[in-house]
Amino acid sequence: MPPPRTRTAPRIGDSPARAKSRAWGRLAELRGPGVPARALDARALAALAANPGCRRRAILDGAGVDKAALAGALGAPSAFGQSQFAFMRGNAFEAKVKADGGAELLRLVHRKLDAGAEPPGGARVPELGAVGPEGRAARTALALREATEAGGWTLLDHPMLALEVAGSPAFLEPDAVVVHPDGSWTVVEIKSFPMLDGAADPAKVGAAARQSAAYLLALEDVAARLHPAPRVRDRVLLVCPRDFSNLPTASAVDVRKQRAVTARQLTRLTRIQDIADTLPEGVCFSPELPAEELTAAVEAVPATYAPECLATCELAFHCRARSRAEGAVTTLGRSARAELGGLTTVEDVLAAAHGEAGDPDDPAVAALRRAATLRAEALGSVGREAACR
Image 1 (tube, one colour):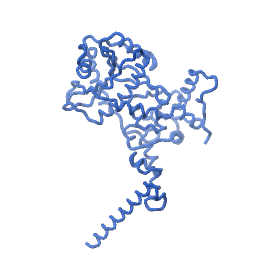
Image 2: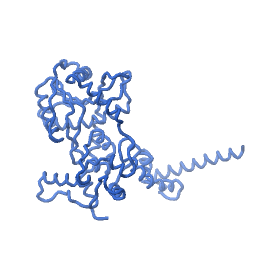
Image 3: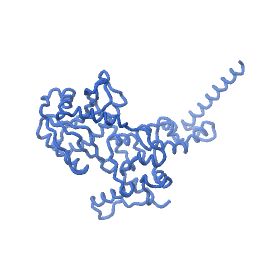
Image 4: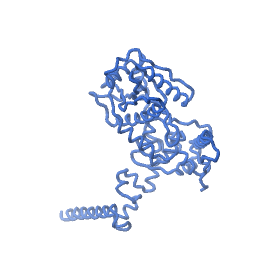
């Protein structure tokens, strides 16, 4: 295998802008010639933060690779994603919530989060259009500053927020951000799953909370550049259809725990440029490449597979097949992997359980041998009972 390339490493005399440009050029090479970058959204960011040890996902997301197309080219297409019907239903519901200048949405924010403030009549809805994600993020930051200084209610519809992830910028687009009369900011997340009798599916609420935590971190970066820094509220407004109707209802969700976890996990991510520097010369993840060459490129980056990846990553089926072929214990789940200590393959586990390998003083080995003894005794007693019959 050719030695790793280090083209993105800083050079003596390099300006920050030139170093950044070189790093972005390297990531563009990884995507393939003429392949546009795929935006890293809050859902993907939450999944990446939940598995910070997976360098494969980090470099693919950081380079903007379309993982769904990549999985299809590898022969292991992803089996999850939002159906076209659900996508259209979600868009229709969001449009209903934001109709009439967001009057209903602001009413829900007022009632659930800021009942002591003046009613939101005639709120401002600034225009946030600009060229490119960087331009939209700058326009959003300006609109937030102006709204905070002006007072009153302001609704920012699909603002663009920037957040540094593993040394590279990610651009996030929440459904809405509301500026309160006291200058504080609230994230609004609009989902199409229902609230039945005032409660929604806990798993879906948890996923929405993790996404919103990423928005909070990005908003806090914007707030930190203002003086004085506005307060970013740690309760987000989750808006959903009420029961089986299309009428909106809302719930205030405390995301302090999710925010802390996401912030901690993001700090553990290896810088994307550092991962890129370890890759062999000529590695490219373009789905147009031959299957063998593409497989070799993907396998050049280590992955950390766990069963939870099946619900969050498009490459999960490919990584699971590779993990099973290698006999990795990670296919059994993170809890089993943690219990087995230094035993990383199923073959090692079985050898330790049968007394063929492993240190007897190792707690994991001792537990496995004890379990094997109990299993043999149980099977022996069952066999004796069957013989007596």
